Amino acid sequence: MFLRIVKDSFARQPRRKLLTALALALGTAVATATLSVALDVGDRLAREFRSLGANLLVTPQADALPLEIGGVDYRPVESGAYLPEADLGKLKTIFWRNNVIGFAPSLDVPVEVGGAAGSAASDNPPRNATLIGTWYRHDVAVPKGGGTFTTGVASTTPWWSVQGRWFADGAAESVVGSTLARRAGIATGQTLELRAGDRVARLLVVGIASTGGREDNAVLAPLATAQQLANRPGQYRSLLVSALTKPEDAFSQRDHAGMTPAEVERWYCSPYISSISLQVQEQLPGVEVRPIRQVAVGEGRILTRVGALMWLVTLAALLAAALAVAATAGTTVLERTSEIGLMKALGARRAMVGAFFLGEQWLLALLGGAAGYVVGIGLAHLVGERVFGVSPEIRLILFPIILGVAAVVATLGSLAPLRRVLRLDPAAVLRGE
Image (cartoon, rainbow, N blue to C red):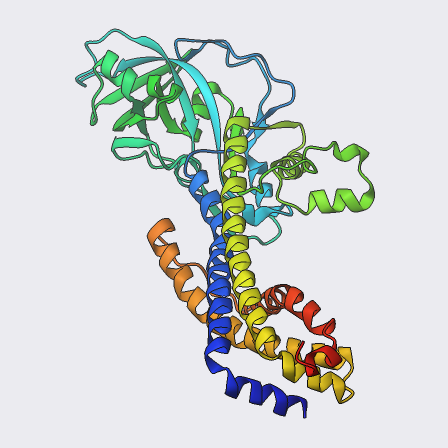
């Protein structure tokens, strides 16, 4: 009997039912599109931000204060503390190891830069500069059977511009900063003689780098070259880490020492920059890990605002759908007042009458939600391609969620008409009042 009454209602009022289904389909289509994009946009933007530079700085806990004048580091090589290069593979064993997308150690060595005999720069007098030893693209062995991981400044700072090419790790090659190259008259193809005390290295210049930072006034070379000049084999002084993180909130900024065990587990298992910093510190004893706050805070604000915008658009679309459902449902109640009064007069209980009314709306919600999901997936691909340059992943888990959202919207839109149905007096209706 229930299904027959619902079927007859659809047969008598197909146009109004179609309008209700279309309103739900449009609302859920926008919801599907925004949710699909929102689920991908966080990771997408986080990866885009990682191309702007690292967000963690790792240094020894007991290190000498830097003495840098005009981009030249004047600290004695023998001062300060150093860290073992052999431990760096442990970074890919932390809980959030897949979020660590790159790291690059560096070792600064004060050197005298001069041209090697027979080179075009040999006529220029030697000048003081800093040699920055680092990795460009280096294979690191990961402990516990983790294989190898390729990392370096190619991963942490891919936006650095180089005229020519980068040095090959392990080769006697270098890249010179643009400011130093201009002042010293250094060009690609020349051979530089770098002297640190009684230790000398001759490096072929294969590129001119422009970074907008201190590297513009320095010589960049493989880490092994800097270690040889500094007489620090297998050691480095600082480490830049690029990690995908979750925007900070009030919970992440709490001191984890005062948290309950459940809160500590939640904090530790969330990719906050603070929790990843602690995990790095656990794997590299004797280090101090500091977030680069300008980068982390800026990323968090943008991700939070983009997410808020997506939710605002979704809620606006669903509210519009609920209002459309309320309008059509109210009209339906007015047209079917006599029918509802007769059902109550024949003994139908209020719960049964409400079930008939809501049954129609839920059936429309299923039809509209299914259509909205299909349309929303297409809309999500269009928005993803046009705005972010990549299509979001199709997530089937959204389908039952969208159907549930459609049912909730249909129910909320039907509350006012449903209240009128339940309060209807059959005697007054049958008398024509």
